[in-house]
Image (cartoon, rainbow, N blue to C red):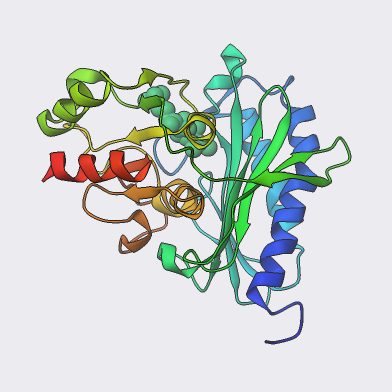
Length: 292
Ligand SMILES: O=P(O)(O)OC[C@H]1O[C@](O)(COP(=O)(O)O)[C@@H](O)[C@@H]1O
Ligand SMILES: [Mg+2]
Ligand SMILES: [Mg+2]
């Protein structure tokens, strides 16, 4: 193990502390930033003033940490060189930001990789998210994906993390939420939906982190699948797919691209998209069987 500032897991803990410490400021800055700006992000999506605000706050706070060599975000074309250090941090500054105008929940997603970007999910040394709901919470774990423990924290007004509990998916799943327009779902995915909608109840809010939090709490399955019009779906591997797979697998569930764990998906580009399916073991096994 190296000095504290170069040990990837120690750096990762500092990154999670920093994301929590910035969360109250992100939240406080939202009311005046609900308007769309001109231009698009690298994924071709509209950008709110709040997306840019959260990205700037996170870049300066995370980029200042010893041991973080790279900061990347969904809102920037290229990764930023933040100094010497083995760790790369990939952030979705505001996940579900289209929920800001309708005042529904949103999150901040963080992935800490031991190595250069784009990186595979097996290179994660920590991942998690902040959820700006009725309370501000953080769900995160540190360590290799196969060894991590996922914990929930409440984030105080001062940006401290207070541990609530470790998270394990309930054995008796109850909710599902799937993104994309129904006529755009491929026939094999639509057949899977027919099966699970007889067993589970629909909970879909349009922010991945909020929808995933329901699955973590009540058990079930969340997906933003491959679409007829978008064979890799909508969500981005570095900023969304990998961290959410890390959290769900760490909490005893599974993730899948449709063909194996998201954490094994080859990394080919900073903004690459990936079909995302996460949830209870049995539900993901049946999904993979349905997708053949
Ligand atoms: O509006 P749709 O198609 O349901 O998409 C919702 C999905 O898109 C996202 O909002 C994409 O994330 P961003 O808001 O960070 O771009 C996810 O949070 C969510 O799962
Ligand atoms: Mg997102
Ligand atoms: Mg976003």
